[in-house]
Amino acid sequence: MMIKFQYNKTSLQSLDKQLKMRVRALPTIKNKESALRSEVKRAKEVADEFDEKLEARLNEIQEMLQLYDEYRPDILTVKEVSMSIKKIAGVRTPILDKVEYSIKDFSLFNAPGWFLDGIQYIKEIVNIALEREFFMRKMELLDRARKKTTQKVNLYEKVQIPGFQEAIRKIKRFLEDEENLSKSAQKIVKNRKAMEEAS
Image (cartoon, rainbow, N blue to C red):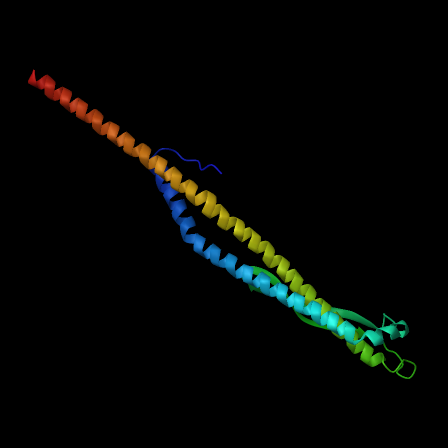
């Protein structure tokens, strides 16, 4: 990225202002990146825990799953999923509040004895799967924000700050050279006048 500037004091002041702004903002952006990185890691760990919990729960009910042929899938449906939003390092992330289920009426006398337990197990498994999904989404949102923040840190550190510093150096050098030339020209004029007056 080329930084556009002119060789004058106005441009120098403008560049200096922009440089200071970026130098001041950099630690904050780095802190945000660090916070996001640890939040992404935490969300991934929780999602992995839900994977393990889901697998463990499915293993526990392995025998019951063989009876699943007797189960009617339309008996239990997810009626509503309530969620809220929580900001983490400026990023809006979804939080699962609660899951409401709808259970169709069925005859306890005609249904197998395990039906009520089976419905509870399915609720648990759906809850775990939904929680996991929310943490995966949270992780994706935080990771996307982290990548953008990392890009901004790199842009500031590797491109803009050195670019502004270099541009400021060039302008200062130019203005110093211009001032030295002006002083030299004034000396020559002064010396010439002094020589003219002497002769």
